[in-house]
Image (cartoon, rainbow, N blue to C red; front, side, top):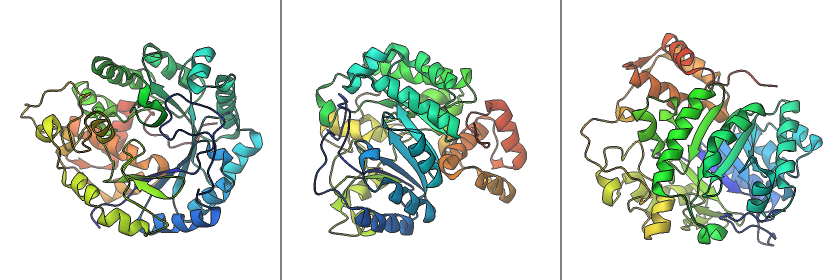
Length: 402
C-alpha cells in the first residue's frame, strides 16, 4: 500500500467540561452512540494492522471517556505511540501517573493566552487557565512530556511570542500553534487575516531560533514550509497537509474523515473495516493524486505544502481547491528543497530509531530539511551530529526532561 495512516487523531468522546468557542466537534454532552471500550480496542487492532505509528487521543475531553486508560494501554501494547490532547483541567497527579503507566508519550495541553481572563473567556469556563497551568506542572513533576497548544485568533494573535516564552518557562517539550479552520462551533468566529497568518508563521520561525530546546510547530498551516525555507529555519521540515495521505480522523461514533477540519464522511468502522475505508475512498484517491486546483495546483510548493485542505473546503466548498489564506503567488522555477531526495545511511537510520516514536517523524523531516539546506544528499551519523549542533536540541528531545 503506497499510503498508510501514519498518524490518526481520535475524538474518543463528545463529552467536555468546557465550552470552547472554536470547537469543531461542538463538544458538551456525550452521546449513546459513541464507540464502546470494546469497540475501541478492536479499532486499535485495525490501526496497528494498517501500520499506524502515532495515535492522538482527544475529545471533547478524553479524560471523560470511561475507557481512556484501557485504550491507551491497548494502543501502546500494539506498538503505537500515544499522545493525549486535553484541556488539562481534569488532570491530577494520579491521572498523570496512570497515563505514564499506560505508555502515553506526551500530553498536549491547551493554553490560548498568558492572561487567565482571556483564556477562560475563550474556553467558556472560569478557572480553565489555572487548571491548564496546574496540569503542566504535574506533568513536569511526573516526567511526562508536555506540549503547550494554542489556537491563533484575532484576540491572541499579538501574544504568540509571549505564549512560546511561557511554554518554555513551564518546561514544556514543545509548543504548537493551531491555525483556526472555522468549522463546528467555530464556524461563526473570525479568523486572523491572511497577512497576520504570514506574520504568525514568521514569528514561529523566530521562536524556534530563540528557544532551540523547545519543539515549535504549526498545525493547519502547511505554508510554514515556504516561510521557513525563506528563512533557513529548522521548521522547514514541519510542513505539508497530510489529510488523507498519511493522516485521518476518527469520530466518537466511528466515522472516518480526512482530518477533523475536513468533515467529509469517508465511511464508518461499524459498517466497513478501517482498511477498506482508507484504501477505497474516491476522495482520498484524489487527494493522494494531488489533483489540486487554483494556485495550489500550479504552485512550485504543491508537494511540500499543498495548502490546507480543510480551509480550502471551508472557504470555497471544494476540498481540492486553492487555499485562499495563502498570499504566495506561484511562479518560482527553483525546485523546493523538500522535493530534492536524500539518502540515509544504515547507521544514521539506527540512530534515528533511538528517538522516541512520537516525535521521530518530525525529527526526520527536520534533519532532511536542514541537510538539504546545507547541500547534503546523504545523511550519515556525522551529518546528524552537525545538524543537531546547528539547530540546538529543540527538534532532538532524545533525553527525557524532568
